Image (cartoon, rainbow over all chains, first blue to last red; front, top):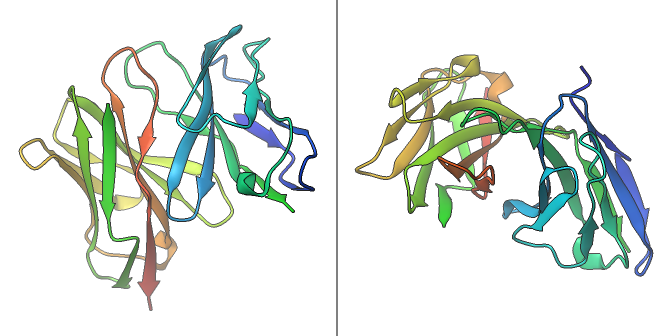
Length: 114
Length: 114
């Protein structure tokens, strides 16, 4: 199993550009989520999905879109990048079977918006 | 709603000394609690979790944590620090039923002094 994979590892954008951060998992997990990590603020939930076709907003959703067309993939889209979106982005997944399964995290994407 | 407070954004201990990282939580219902570790330029890895079974939880790499309901705490300890323990540590909380969303603390960076 590859676990949770994220691409790209690094990205530099100019203000106003768009891009998609890719996330995939091969564990057949129903639940997937996106977090951003900023110094001194821990990880904050952007969007999450409880299954294919179902997504919902987290704590900091503004400026980001998501979709979940398959169980495996959960891309995060920045439609018009802003410097405030400079951050490290983590994707995570977990199974909802059982009541206390851990979340597995990808290696992260470091995004800089100039 | 739930929240987590980690006291001390930076902690330094000598090699071989006790490690104590503090975490206090707030939750409207009995929580599940987690400690994650993040090594430089990597994703998050689960250290241990409390899921309402034993209040003293043992994790990987010699770490353990004790759930104290009266103090709403879940402090992380290790009797003897090793250089390889240098990392950032995150406490996280989630509701114990029907909700996979994790709420993270702001993190504690642990430095080991040789």
